[in-house]
Length: 128
Image (cartoon, rainbow, N blue to C red; front, side, top):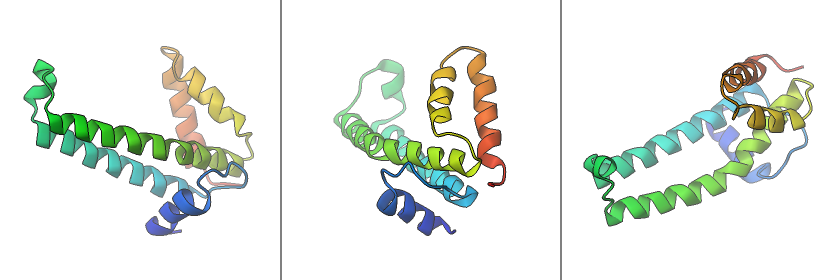
């Protein structure tokens, strides 16, 4: 599965689909897409609004606009992110509820680091 096909699958065909399986390429291409989107938004936030806005906490109108766009993008991409991770766990013959456990346990200090390594290993391993 290629980059554009993975994005199309996650955002159009399986936007809210928690059943089925996701291949490694689908999961990692979608993760790459999310990373690129956040880098573009961060560059717009800091580049258009200026770096001193973060230090002095004096945001410009551009900062608020880019921040609003980032919030809308986050809300729009949150569900497919969870869905593709659940499908990736299904490909490893794990229940999708483990994604909820990963989310909860990742908020515990020191335990969260180990859980994030475990979830990384699960998503990297070849599917069954």
